[in-house]
Amino acid sequence: MTRTARELLESTTGKLAPDPHANRLLPLIARGAARRDTLAALALEQRHVIAADRRAFLHLAERSAAAGTTAGPECAAFFGMLAEGETLAQDRLGAYAAACGVDTAREAAYEPLADCQAYPAYVAWLALNGSPAEVVLALSANFAAWGGYCATIAESLRRHYGFDDEPCGFFDFFAEPAPELEQRALAAVQGGLDAGGLNESDVHHYGRLLQTYETKFWHALWELDQRIAP
Image (cartoon, rainbow, N blue to C red; front, side):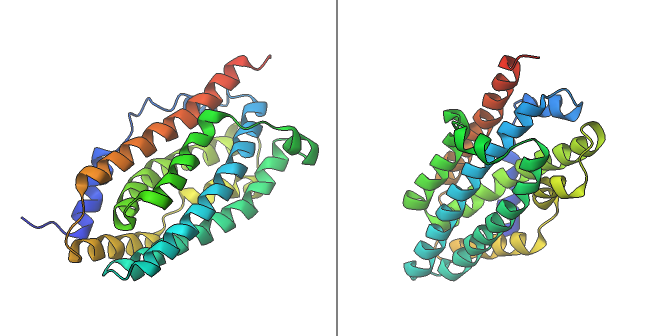
């Protein structure tokens, strides 16, 4: 039986949902036990992630527009919106970083963690090598987990760390429902189906690696939190 774009998106998101215990840092933040230096490292790592992801999404938009396939315009619109979102997120990240005590000197001296930067490195690989419509599906599944993480962090920053709305704005942005982005994702997936179908094996492969690298990101920060002296 032929599945609709929505059915395919929902089933893919369900299959690729991470183990609820995979993110070891999230429970620490949720109860206010993560150190502020760890929260600062999260901001510093995100600076690199956002910049890299924005360039990757722009490249995917360009590839999609140039492909001349049925799904090309829809995929280009989806990735273009993602790139715009990264620009907005970058603007909001500054207030969070400042609330964590990050200044220009600290930012310049910071050495990114390899496991935190594995995720954007793989997104860059997908931008060069992945089929755009299939990348749409894999990314959309990953975003579902990321949005949930951000909602938890935003609530905890207010409750346990005394942050007000502006420093929490970065996480609020990703935690908020994004109906327009979802519609663009559905249009891109439908375009892929109309063009002859999607390789669900590749989608699963892309999505599984994205989730694995996402887990590595949080685990690296959890390990950092364990090493920081009280």
